[in-house]
Amino acid sequence: MKDINYKIRVMTIDDYDEVYSLWQTIHGFGIRSIDDSREGVDRFLKRNPTTSVVAVADGKVVGAILCGHDGRRGCLYHVCVDENYRKCGIGKIMVVACMRALQAEGINKVSIIAFKINELGNHFWKEEGWTFRDDLNYYDFTLNEDNITRFNK
Image 1 (cartoon, rainbow, N blue to C red):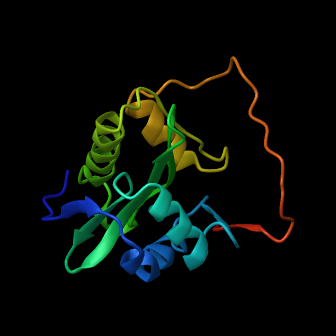
Image 2 (cartoon, rainbow, N blue to C red):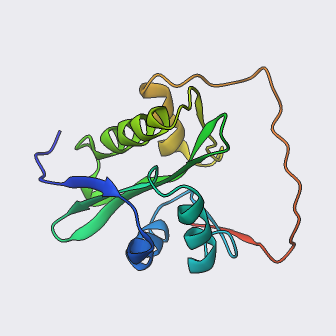
């Protein structure tokens, strides 16, 4: 593990430009045109003001997690760490910070959705002891066809 000085703090909309730039560098990462716009993220953060986090090192955002809940179950979205800052424990510490924030709000279970093409992310979740669910099917329904997902390669 590298020795890097970093700070984990609650994400605000003021972090958006740096977070969005970081998202664009992550391989296997899907960015949605509406949900991940400034307006979409602002709406998410207003609904979940204490549960999303960023990691800051060397004066810039090097990691981020959108985290929220519906009152029953929490979910982590867009978990990422700049590749120059990986293997430092930043991802794990950010996840723990989100889980503690969820627990403080009375949430007892959290999930993550990782695209199958995101090999690095899937490896991370397995290594961290998360349970891969093969006992259910995940479905979604698109309400707005303009909300396009673009994958980073």
